[in-house]
Image (cartoon, rainbow, N blue to C red; front, side):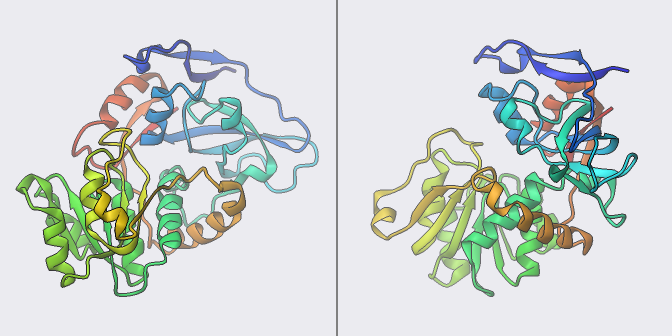
Length: 325
């Protein structure tokens, strides 16, 4: 029995994906207190591509779904054959992600999946839903107020709309393509601004909010676009940057800093240990109630990881690309 894995064997900053290779590793044994999980589904997330580009993990992959393959002595939380989500909190520190078939974890980091959550939804249980829940919780946007988000057409952006609507928060959603407008409104978006129609974001936000501007914002773009985002938030408002689609710098107008607009990075992995149980308990309820609904796209075998990476970077690709096998 073999353990296929995608491994970063060498690194070239000009072409970081070229250093990836499919390798075979030994299947780990279940030591006392540990669980060996056979991972069968893994989404390709932007954070995975970022980890490859920055050479931070030997084996990429931030989340996945699998079946308990073996349990070690003293394990009481799961049994062999059970459907589970492996939490890679500790293993990622060792360079081990989910783009492999078998992984060993402490039993505390293996979550039994309820029957009401499908395999493909469970594979997407962590990165997007936890980020959406965490950011909206931390922003503390009152009911009836507007929150602004960029990259609203992404899977995460759609889940942001779903949860905000459930909590009574209005959303202003920025997309690049005008054809996404009606689709997002049907999902529950209150307002959608399309940049390919050359709409001035801040002017439109003022019109939408009656001059008050947005209560807060989340930004997946960064780069020069953050300047428009910060200008669209009211005095003393908060902007969370959680992505780098537009570059690794973030431009903010000095005038907005004088207005007390606070711009900060937000990362799921900062403070994750402290909020671990909160995320599991609260997000599982939201997913079981179908309030947050993950969206799966095309699937690729683990051996076809390069095709999966390419597909995951395409515009209008649909749902989340999934690696199987």
